[in-house]
Length: 353
Image (cartoon, rainbow, N blue to C red; front, side, top):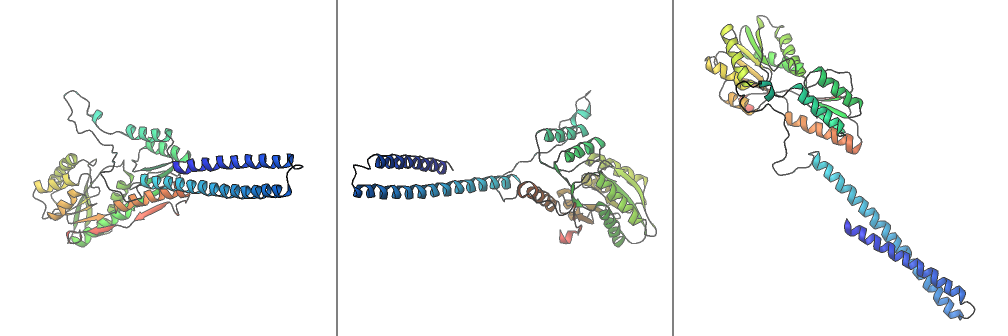
């Protein structure tokens, strides 16, 4: 790029000098018109015409070089944006920015709330991104009034907002990329009905009402199971996506409901804890367990025969679509064709894992 601009300045300088020479020679020819011979005048005129031609050629070359430099600069900018948008295959460790609870043990007398992520933390990140001039925001939001309000303000500011894998309740226009949670819950209930024989007494665990999608998934499960005779939900637990909490709550559910013969793990966060509780109580053979996602802990439980089936919601594809939509909007000026991009649920068992 630097060579292009250096060459351009050089050509421009040459054009200026040529123009000066043309003016000087023409003025000299005019001044000496009475003393110069006709042959000399014709030679000077020919030289002037040749110089003008060279000037025009150099000017055209300069314009071509400037256009080529602009094209290269534009292409470099686009390539850099594609790299930053993760749309170009790259090799390396990559960069992961994640908000998570602290792994440090809480000391005696300390407030445990100091070590966990709160709504305020997420709210602060959203507001800092707005203040920094973010043009787009891809977020897996919690269903919290203050967080929703911040996202609505971001949308009102013209920020392109994509809700990824989980939606939030708002009338503001935004894009959702993820699965149909209610349909996923109905699928889980129908799957249990096909696997289990006789009546179904189901237990359910999920992260809690702060995740709108998870709440709707449980609602879909309940509504579908209620359509079957001798089928009901006997207990529901909120595990906050925490394995230890899920383990303790599942032990309590097993002890309080010995009739429980089916279990729906609506979110993958506490799946390992749920499974370990059934192992602890030696109930893995007489309880049918269906879950969502295929994280390593769930894969291990599938292979161990603890979990019978998992519903896969294509998380990688969700991320790819969200990034492509953002790139199209910011770089190419292409608006999304619709507001909801729904992934099809896929049932996974050990034979097709």
